[in-house]
Image (tube, rainbow, N blue to C red; front, side, top):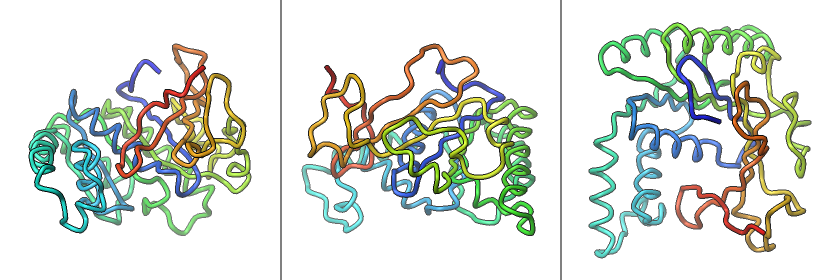
Length: 253
C-alpha cells in the first residue's frame, strides 16, 4: 500500500466476529512507534484495549490478565509491555456520543497540543451524526465529514465499517465494494478499502492450509487503492491462539 498517507482514509470492513478491532488496534500500536495518534473506541472500553495490547506484546494470555492470574515468570514481560505501551504517544477515548463535528474539533486540539498525525474510528456507525436520517443518508454524511477532517487537518484516518448481508455471503471470493454497508459515498471517499474475512473453505492460491488451522485464519483483501504498489489482492493472516494479535500466515507453497 505504500503506507498510510496524510490526508487520506483507510476503510476496513468485515462481518461481525472477524476481529476487525483487533487488527486495527495492532496497526495503531505499530503506528504509535513513529507518530502520535488517537483512538476513538465507541465499542470497547479503554481498559479492554489496554489489556489486549499488553497481552499481544507480552505474549501473556488475555484470560490470565483478566483473572489476575499471571505466572511469576510472566511478570518481567508484563512490566516491560506496560512500560513500552505507556511510552507510545497514543491517546484513547472510549466515550460515546461523538459526532464528526466534535471529533474534528478534538483532533484539531490534539494536533495543536500533541502533534497527532493519525486517528482510528471504531466504528463508523456508532457516530451520532444525523440519527434521524436513513442509514444510507447517515453514512454518506459521516463519510464526507471524516474525509473532510483528514484532508483539512492533514491526518491519516483508519475507519472501521461493517458489511451488508449480501457482502457477508461472498466467502471464498474477494468481497465486492458493493458489500460495504451504507452509502456509495463511503466507497468514493475512502482512499484505500480493505475487507477482513474468515478463511474460505478452499485454499487460496499459494496457501497450504490444514483444516485445523482454518479457524484461526483471516484474509485481508485489498478492494480499492488509488496508488497500490503491488497487484497482490490479499494477505493471509493468522490469529495467535490465546493472544489478541495477528501475524502473517507462513503456510505457503
